[in-house]
Length: 112
Length: 112
Image 1 (cartoon, each protein chain N blue to C red):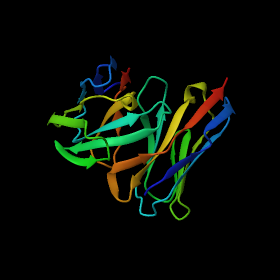
Image 2 (cartoon, helix red, strand yellow; image 1 turned 60 degrees about the horizontal axis):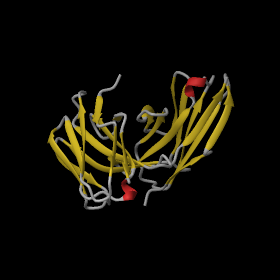
Image 3 (spheres, rainbow over the protein chains, first blue to last red; image 1 turned 120 degrees about the vertical axis):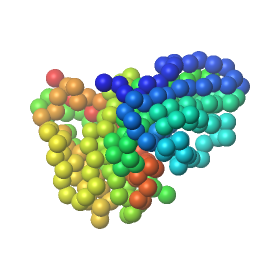
Image 4 (tube, chains in turn green, purple; image 1 turned 45 degrees about the vertical axis):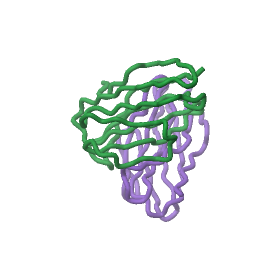
């Protein structure tokens, strides 16, 4: 049963455009994450928020910016997308850092 | 920097057989270890966590952790075709449970 909802499922855009992805969790968790999964299925953490505060900010290009309005929502904005941004972006949440992380189904971004 | 390596890359087992997946890590201070499973088109789903040396069994799944040898493994008993998926080992960076490194995954194929 899905409890982390991501929109859109897919997005195709041109190089240089801006895109935004939305994520909402209904589990009441305090922590939310964005992960990037590339074409080889490699998973890398990008950002982590705990109670709306940024706690993990990996080395990602500055064109990526997370946005948290409350602890149930964590959006991701990409300004001026590049071809290497093509990937599946997975949103996730957990109650604490060491507890189970629940993932959404992902948003597949294709940059042409 | 934490490195997480999984082996084998791909594994084929017959239905009813035992599947053994391995994971090595480089940070001796790592505290938290998880196994995730990802079916095609879905986000990863947590299978189990292990935080102490030794074995942890949950149904058909047994995780084993040996921090001294920097090794964690997952054993799936009585494998089912529905177990066919991509399996990830995830390891915390030191004691920071919010910052997790995923291995490249093992593709498990269970043949009916």
